[in-house]
Image (cartoon, rainbow, N blue to C red; front, side, top):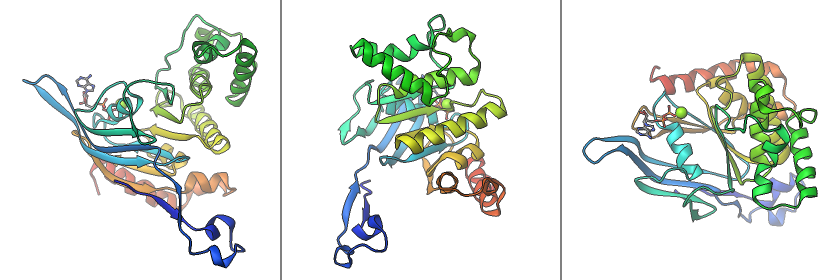
Length: 285
Ligand SMILES: Nc1ncnc2c1ncn2[C@@H]1O[C@H](COP(=O)(O)OP(=O)(O)O)[C@@H](O)[C@H]1O
Ligand SMILES: [Mg+2]
């Protein structure tokens, strides 16, 4: 797949742009991630278990892509392939046109159960990446302060992780991923274990971070409302062995950030989109 976003000067500059430039199409961006015909088989030669079959999709810079699908269809497997934790049995996965060969700092990962150092302070957890990268001490302090503020934890730098609530732990995990400035944030059902109110606050936080930073986000969720409240695009997978059965844009999150009323969550349009995705995920019409 080699989908490109084509646009014209006038679309970017607005209606007043010079007419002479209007018909000059050019490439705004290439795909950041490309997944081409990826299949993945777990197990042994004698007892193979196909998890993914011919999965293809792209992620473009600045997108917020949500991946949905029935339990066990291979969502986490895809994320693990994108992270570089596992290699596909066949097919190609690329970041900026280069094959993903293993784990590196270009992709930040946030799991449902944050992998943090429990007995370390919040500061030390967030400072971990820059320290490994041998960043000078003053820069680390400045960066940690900045990212703790951006996740609303500026007053918790000295707290130990074991003292924190689930939502606060996820804030630490997000700050720890963002501080290494990855090209894409990969999130695997990060709010799945949180209570409803905290989940909503975390959704708002991630949506705001995405909007503010322009960071590309690839986000797995089993919650249709969550996908519709966050995504610019929603991918839906079939049951195992998973493949992509739907790939559609979604505008609710962007509309909200651009000032739309929160009542959009209760609109007929939202309800229709919800029903459609739910139908695709569950296989019911
Ligand atoms: N390391 C593994 N070895 C063998 N089978 C696995 C492994 N990881 C996942 N699976 C199986 O592959 C399928 C897809 O798993 P997963 O990607 O975790 O699904 P999802 O995240 O969509 O729930 C499931 O049937 C799961 O049991
Ligand atoms: Mg999973």
